[in-house]
Amino acid sequence: MAGKIIHERQVLPEDWQIQRDGEHISCSVGIMAHNEEANISRTIYAVLEQYCLSVRIEEVIVVASGCTDRTIPLVAEIARQEPRVRLYTQEKREGKASAINLFLKQALSPVVVLIGADVIPEAYALDHLCSPFKNPEIGMVGGRPIPVNDPDTFMGHAVHLLWRLHDRLARIHPKLGEVIAFRNVIAGIPIGSAVDEISIQALISQLGYQLIYEPACVVYNKGPLTIGDFLKQRRRIYAGHLQARRRQNYEAPTMKTGPIMRQLVACHDFAVSTPRQVMWTLGVVILEGYARLQGYYDYLRKREHHIWQMVDSTKALETGGHKVRRICNTCSVLVFRFLLEDSAEYAFSPERKERDETDVARKLLPALRSKMRKEDKLTISGPGIMTAVIRAEQQGAELVAKRIQDEVQATTVRIGLRAREVKPTVAYSSLTFALKARNVSMTLKGGD
Image (cartoon, rainbow, N blue to C red; front, top):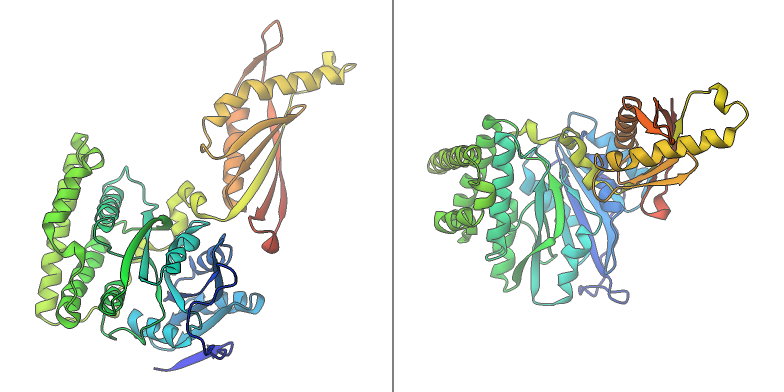
């Protein structure tokens, strides 16, 4: 394995117990990446900006394998600014298991976290994920993935249905994936593993530790957008599960169809509540069955899947549209100024103009609130001034501001005792900043 190291590894502490400063649990975060320029920066910053009450993120190690895009320079730039970030490169793509083994050789902390380069954690996700390690019997914890796909499409329905079933099954028999944390007590996993989380589950459970699923640890990912990508992904996973059962004598909880069908019945509100959902769910069952047949064929033919075929449609979380706003750790403030055209009646009474502009803002407030997310705040904050506080990066805030601006300027409002019709215009400014004070970055931009 050819590799290049950026930032030297520190010396391991002699005391290999969980190091706590008060109640803090130290952890190392590993991100395995192959051509992830669309997501890698967002993922790293989402990890660095985590709210951690009982967990301390000591280091973030990125292993970039066979990258031919801008993944490596993007990570290297972050590493130059943030001492906790370290970059390791593999010149050739050798499979995710190989990258994980390199990460485990370099990780310093007694608890290690694995998170995909195309997965974004909620602000408190890693705190929820790692807090259970205060119990010495816990060896591995997994979080709850939520897809950003549109559930009102067939493929979006398929992805949401599978993750709902995963969530329900994992609460009974832990099946951990997408983001996991475990004690740093294993040297590595089988190099040919195509399902790294299951291989780690097998090793940790065989050491006598308990596995738990923590649904409060929410992360966002993107499922396949095409039937071809869906089959490719599900085929590889099932073949990997069969391989892990043979090589490691460990069976994933999702291997048996009985428990899955029971949970499918329990999810009837999402799966079969309308005729369209019935047809879509039937289609998902057929596709999953076909993918498992393909995976079984690969297993019999000893076809290796440890170097994954890229599932291109799962990349670029930005294509999840407004849903990406749920997963960012950035806040934006939008300030709108409602304006009415100058007229003779306002010439000697600017106070009246301000009153009318404020009246316009008040009348439009309920309609504008209905077009925003529940957690966004929209208030009247001054004469003719409306302020919105939203969880969004600069680009997302601009989209929200433009939407409000277009809505206002397409509306006729009646004001005053005579119910006079006016056509308001609106100007806006935006301010964007990180939620953690130590990483504050601001952008101020005005709109026409």
